Length: 266
Picture 1 (tube, helix red, strand yellow):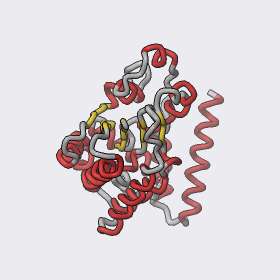
Picture 2: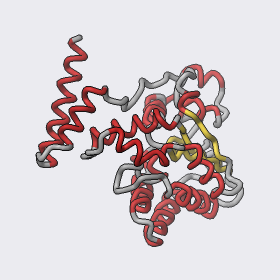
Picture 3: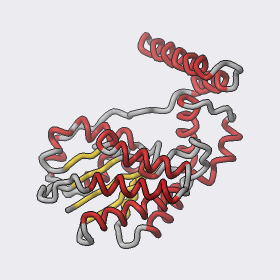
Picture 4: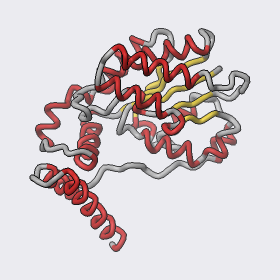
């Protein structure tokens, strides 16, 4: 069986890649089996849990859930399996008190070992990590945190605290050292976004799909883009206020709705 597991990282075009797979599912499924978050939610949630609490029990739970899912795959189906979820590397730094991806190498070692133990050592297994330049990645993560959680740090404080987490290539090096002979595909967003199918391109290139199938696919639009500076400033002001968490959430949703309405009117 062939498996390609796209397991990270956040804010590197992963959502656009997954939207592209979903939008082109009818064209792709005769050739590959597509597995996204909703298909493996228990496995992904276990990975996030371990990243926040590095207990042996949490890692064992991740392996058990992965093993249980892998046993559902039809070994007689010749199509390669493509699994894509950036949370397989754990929570994004900035969530649950995490300041780095130090859980990622541990999770990827557990993932590859469990996969080969479950499906057999002859399994054709590869791991793919989407990457991004450090400063661009940090700015995208910061904008996401301002909108989604109650991040109260101004940019300068956040940048200093999370600089080490932004060297995704260094984290990929540590992952590669942990997964042994399993090939690691590195896919920088700066390269893939200029290709015809965007962030899907390096993943599909690894699957040796027929050229006529690739030519028929449509790239998805950019997904989950970074909010503009004026909105980020409003989010930060709300986050730093003495309002309740609910009122802060409501204020940010209202600010974003008004901004989007103004964009459409313009």
